[in-house]
Image (cartoon, rainbow over all chains, first blue to last red; front, side, top):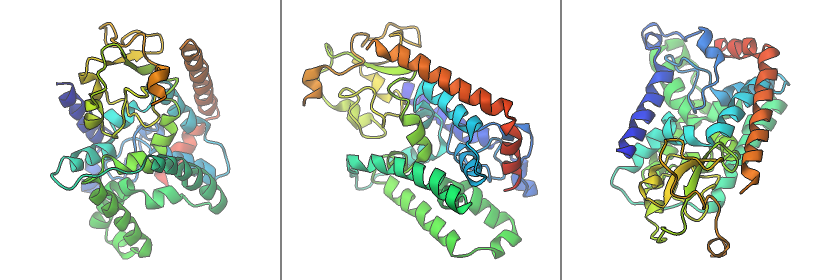
Length: 286
Length: 38
């Protein structure tokens, strides 16, 4: 049931920020006041049906203009401080797509843990430093979500845009196809290794209001939580793991529960792991 | 851990300050301009 709820939230996260459907009919962008809101999702604001602004696009724009993005960074920091990476796990449309692709029967594998550091390099390089130096939004130029819901619809809808296709478009298509293909075999490869928005939210996981609690007294270390985890981590080994999407799928195990920094269950039921949001030293040493 | 609620409060206050500073600097207009320029 909880799993189905997450799928419903993910579907809403994909549809509601992109519900200006007349944008497709009129081949135009929504330019109302909602575009001043940075969505906490990787959702391209060049999509004809997008209602909200892309947070990463906004950060890059400010770097291009040589100004610090206080409003955009503040929006993301408030959300990160409240729920950590929860929007990645429950609302992000590109995460939803990767989750669905992984459901297909195919050869499955994992990616090395060190690839997680690459997303911080992408955040620093493609979102802050290179746009500042080159005055170009380089992450947006390469973003696979931008290609999927921004680039491809515009190429389909508008002949002028189609005539402007150059080599960069094919690079974007290749990146999109690469992540679609890899998502068939690896759990959320883009979120884990590349997403700069996930990199921002992940630094808040340790101190966010919403926390994951683990009860070492009831945990049998069976590892089933890793099997259902959409990013292939062991939440029992580190409930504050920066990779954790706070999707709460693992809370189907009674040893793991959603809680808060004040050790109170946000959903009204006593948290199973009130005494165990941190790893006991014998587990950490393994 | 006892430090976690303190870390949350400090982080949240810093985040809200950043947001409020950007809001009162009228950065929303720049965000809107950026979205319109696509």
